[in-house]
Image (cartoon, rainbow, N blue to C red; front, side, top):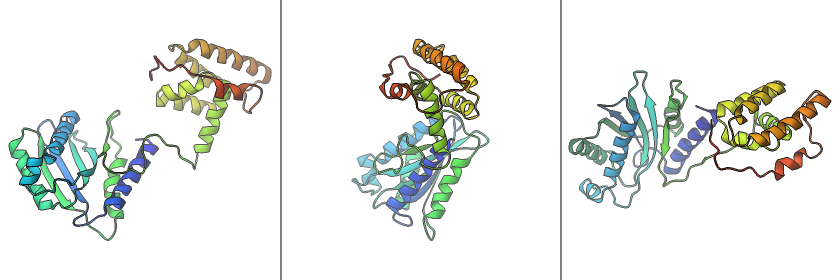
Length: 278
């Protein structure tokens, strides 16, 4: 899990507690286990979606005396045990609800549906302050055995998240990263933006790491390997020829702004169709 993803989820969990409070009548904590097919996250996620839809039915809310206009705000965090089985941790808020009514609702849900939802444990959050709740939820974000391509944290859409989508850090090594990208872009002005936005994370890291360690020719070779299978290869060849001429005359890449390189960075229009991360 990347540092950015951890930061985003910690901030959003913290924001959830700060927005809805903690303790009796505010935010509840819920754990959901899954019985058969508990090793298949897709099936478990479908059961969780079914449970949420069931909770929002008007007839169900009337039956269990849950306010009809009260939205279900939540943060759910998936955890995969070493055995491979999945279960779910949820911070939830429904204005005017009681945990007793929710327990009855979940018990009824298990009896009338064929989902694989197993044991559901629900309690009010408690403590002297919200820090313990934040720590309890975010500790699961640091687990090492994570599957690639699996979303572990989800948010309901009816509350304001502190951190959304893409963002940039403004401290630490961020300035070094940006300076390196600026240097590479100065030498491959026609194609580096495209590479940065479309190549896989591992390929971008490999190129930037090589450049930071002054392995400029290795970085250019990695770029060449990527663009050799890309429709933008003719543009990259132009960049590569100019890089080669500059290298032959200076025995180094262009590390400081000069001539037309800076203009090319801002003026180039990158065609976007056909692009795919590889």
